[in-house]
Length: 85
Figure 1 (cartoon, one colour):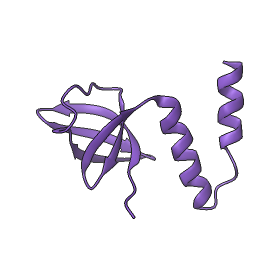
Figure 2: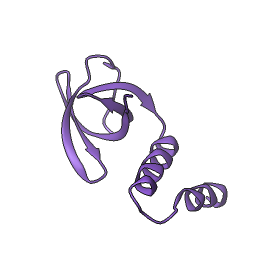
Figure 3: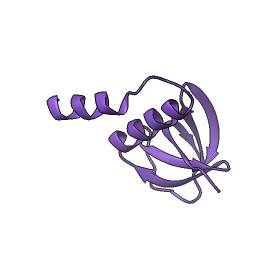
């Protein structure tokens, strides 16, 4: 099974981007998504940005991953925040 994780694009130089994944920065290839801009969220798999996603989906996915790793349930709080905000 493969897993792509959401990351925020912090910087772009040529076809490479520096992204933030749960507080860790990594270099990834943006070859498959040349339209990517700083501030976009992308799904990263095996060092490649595969697809753009919106911020809400990225935050929800990261919250679910954190829950799988034992963090307190936060997905409901994200939904409440979006409804109120």
